[in-house]
Length: 142
Image (cartoon, rainbow, N blue to C red; front, top):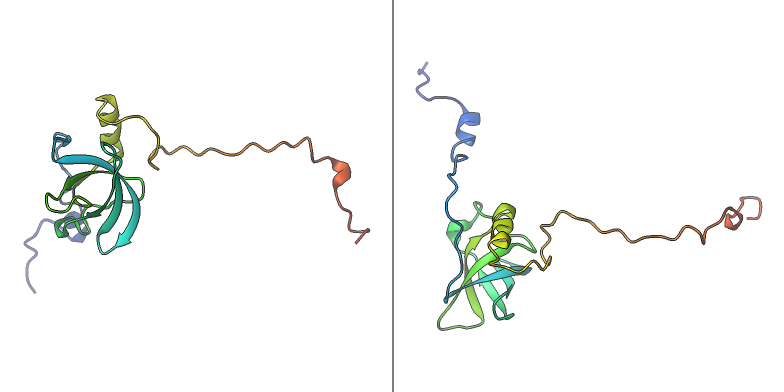
């Protein structure tokens, strides 16, 4: 029977890579734009609306992001516009919620509330004064 030479089983291996040091948040420049994800098209393609020029572009997520970085509807991404195709872009970075808050504090992006990352739910108010006890339907009348 072989000896165990590792430092643990699959639970230890599953935890590898969790200690990612906090680096700098990538910011936009002349060639890069902040954008919100509007629609998922499949095959790592998205429709994203740029914040700087309000143009909707088809964004492509590269293969190195597959199963490592996920982008959902309302996610903030950093796009690099292709120089030969203005209506297509490549996704360079997908921001987390903490990074979006940090960008708002730095006033890199406006506080518009478009994204689905606010964790707030607004419920419509219902006026209960219209419904009285006399409007109930009894089973005897049916």
